[in-house]
Structure formats: structure tokens, C-alpha cells
Image 1 (cartoon, one colour):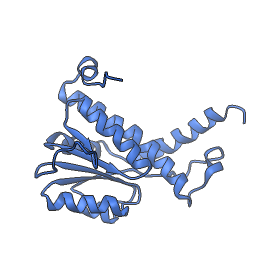
Image 2: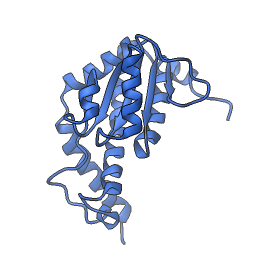
Image 3: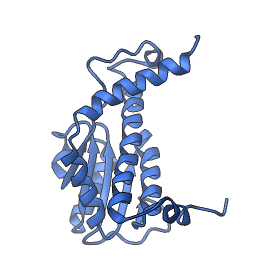
Image 4: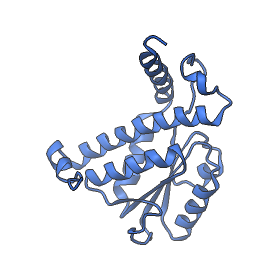
Length: 193
């Protein structure tokens, strides 16, 4: 149990490094372009994906984009020119697919964030961020105490860590392209709490 926190961090980082090495700059730039060109952005995922999707929605607002988390009561309607960021590790989460289909029907676009580009969500998406969930070479002696490469909870945890970091990368890229500064971002940060 000694230094378990450091061992866990090493395992998360080794897995993320392998996953990120499979993502090209052009893929990230396509995602940034899709986000920038959208009139409004709606973000949705279930479970881990939904939790970190909320973070993405918040950070997109901080850099000056108009972003919402799907199913919030105060959302405006989804319309032509809007973008749904649909997050599903498997690309087969039924609720996510239902929203993706509806977004397309409403003449919007879908940015799929997933681990399986050949999935139903991959085929529905106009742009993809294909995030490998688990490294073939990384070892997980610490994290493996809650599962292994065949357990959904384990894979969801690794996917969630990867998308959390990648969402911030997208925000960094957007901030640079939009000419945002730390001060302009801070001015949009919540201050009532």
C-alpha cells in the first residue's frame, strides 16, 4: 500500500500516453474546427462520460463559446448549425445514439468521442475523436484491483481519465485560436458560489 497514489498515477499516465500517441494533431484540429464553427454546442454522455462531458461544457463557455449539457432544463432548442458532442466509450450507448440521431434530424452535426470508430456512433458522426481506452502494453497492478481489460468499470475509468485530459487539450487549443487569455477566461468563471 506504500505510495499507492503514485503507482495509480503512473498507471493512468502510462495508459493515457499510449492512447494519446494514437491521436494525430489533425484529428484534434478537426474537433476544434467543429466546436468553433458551431452556433451552439450541446454535450452528452452517460456515466463517467457524462461527468466529464459536463466539465467540457463548462470550459467551452469559459473560452467564450455557447455550450450546454443536454437535458438541462434551461437549454435553448437544438437547431441547424448546432453541434452535439456525443460521448460513448463503446459508441453503442442507446441514449447517446438517440440524441445523435435526433441532432442529425434537426440538421445539426455530431462530434463523436469514442473508442470504437466503427460503432453506430462512429458512423453517425460528422467528426470523431477516437480515444483508445486501454493500452495493450501498460500494466495495471494498482488500478487492476477494481477490474481488468474485460471489466466495464475498469475500461470506463481509463476512458474517462483520457477524455478528461483531452477535453482540456481541446480547450487550450480553442483558447489560443480565439485569442483568449487567463483573464478573459476568469471573467466567465462562476462567482456566485
